Length: 312
Image (cartoon, rainbow, N blue to C red):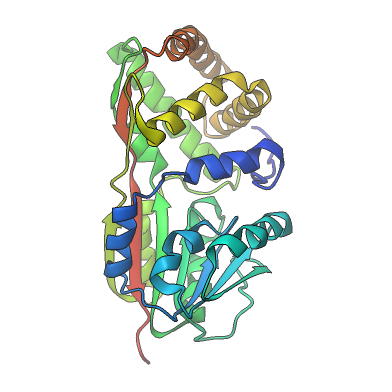
């Protein structure tokens, strides 16, 4: 059994850039407009963003509530909040944006405070996500909205998209799926959260006392196709190249993956087998990226769930 380790510090070094890269182009503009209408966002609203990081959700939806509105970003990282406050000067116009250090399990707001309380990829990292939801519900006004944007990385990892890389055999695919399930269980065992939480959130909102629960899906698809035209594909290409070149980050994720696999029930030999498979395929991936011949296409399960706080 591996020992428990600390969670990811997104404010530290290159991980901060990962935080930025993962969110760039994440939500298509027309999708954001449709979601804003679906949530009935209006100018002048009071909005709380829990686990706000660099204020990404505030920036994303600002045009739909920020004129005369107030945005409060809450995060446990003072460093991220300092950077978020600087960045907000460029986008938080005709309204107010404030950033507060705090815990998702004890939000620094009174009861019935906000028109909308929201989060993105927060619950998936928490040991006690239901307690965080209860806090979000407490802070929402009666008739107000709680909205969560959460992924299902487990199911996404078990799907099969298209890739120009050599096909795994059926036996190899089954083995990789088994390793994926070990990583999933290992994250939970090490207190690093639930990467399958997205589809569970509607029932969690119902248990928290919300009504009129509804759900949507992000329609962004990951596509890399030579000659990689447009800013979106160029961004994906840049992220892929960076992931191959950054040896420090690669070592970090390899250690983390090994810890989670073993904590989730994989044997050392199973992990060594997985590593040999990756060592076999990665030179081909690097060569395809370098020669601009790599192609891949696939989606990810990213849910948007909302619920209304009832009037008592």
